[in-house]
Length: 319
Image (spheres, rainbow, N blue to C red):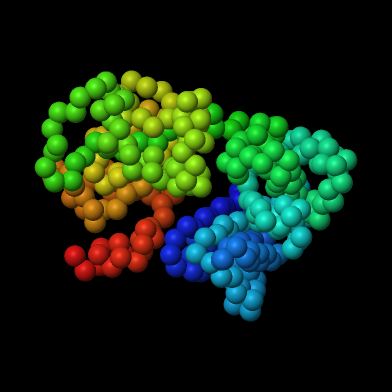
């Protein structure tokens, strides 16, 4: 199974990407690669075989930038070699992509693109997807997020894809509670869920219109955890933030709502607990990590430094 790592931060991304890929080596792979961007310039490094080969290439050539993606590939389309390693680039070279899974109709899409004059360098279905996204973006003038969505609507996958993204966080005030909030449930939740909306908007190139479009059509749901009991959530990708403020009982309730073909990701920082009823060892995030650490269904990554900003990192160390 392939592994994917991404970084958006303030430090050099390449060492972080390589370290992340090392933590995913247990999945198995036959080639690896990273791509970073700095000042509009793309660095693209790939290597056949083990990560040591990619690491040596990075040490020799470098890869500047604080934003990047990395991938370990298990070959499905095309032999395991340098040309077929991920990331793959579009024809223009200004779009870089990695993906897991199989695009069943990639050959049909490839023929359509070839009829438009495109020439492919690899045998991968991933390169076809990068060309397709780039073609839509260039022909329509749409922003990247919408171009990706339109391209994926043409893709037939070998596995069921997630139907929606559900994002939430605990309702936990920092300091004194501001008290009663007027309005209906959705209006009451706006202040609590604003950090999630800020992050999603940032990931979409600060394009609020695109975010609102995804929310309106149900592709993205920004929900309150308060009403999750009784639900059965299938075919979804769920992200729960600030999990250090959950209790063991609450995190159990959330996990047991997961249905078929759903993935759930918990994030949090046990050094920033605002819930007076939990601590670094009893909070829900720590509890889940400890209980699931021997299960093949789960994984756990610890980030040792913050990436919000230099001042935020310094404050967490000094204050």
